[in-house]
Amino acid sequence: MRKYVALLALTLILTGCDTRDKTQELQQQKLTLDLIKAQNEQLAATMKSQEEKSAVLSKKESDLNNWEKRLQEALQENERQKSAIERLQEQIVQEKIAIKTEGERLEVERKKVRADELKNQKDREEIDQKITAIREREEAERKAKGIVTIPASNYFRERAEAKRQSTGIVTTPVTTYFNSLERIMFEITIPDALRAYKFEHDFKGPITNEEFMEQVIKKNSINLPALPSGHKYVYDSIAEKLMVERSPITETNK
View 1 (cartoon, rainbow, N blue to C red):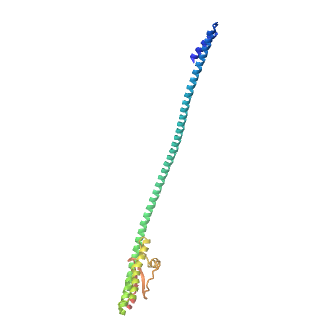
View 2: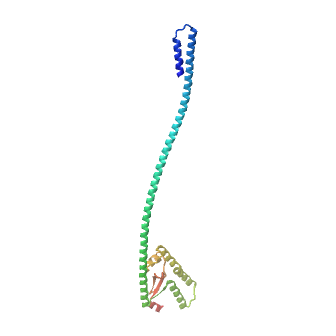
């Protein structure tokens, strides 16, 4: 630019001079044109260089914008991930609190259940002791009265044997058939029904004769064979067996 100004000043000085030599004037004009052409070429080169630099700068600016956009997206993603992590951490804290609370509640319930089990066990032991005392008292009363109780299966075997001996009949197919049915009932069917009852009642057998007849015999549709007059079925809760009670008068008349 300084060179251009100097050349232009020189041209003006030369143009202003009073000269008579036309050739010199033409040379000055030519020089001026050359200077202008050179300046134009320099300006064109400068503009081209500036355009190239501008293009480079535009590309850099575009790249920077892209990087800035990616950076913003990465920051936003990090914020989302940070928020998700914070929510997850909060959820974990809440779950831990809930688990701790539930564990404390379960521990209280376990202690309560254990206390109830101990109480129930104590109650069962007291009931068993009372039942045993009642049974022992009933057994003593039966013995005092001469009443005899034997297992039902033994009772029917004894009756069958006594009947065969009194009639002189050793055996018959029909008698054998009915004895087999009675043995199956007293030795298999009733014990199986009693085991099922105990399985449903904490492995405890019936307490009373009425409970045994209702929950074991009647519930399983077991038809007990008829007994002679003066004989009756009784359930021994201690031995957990069905017995036949017979009075001494009947024993005498048998």
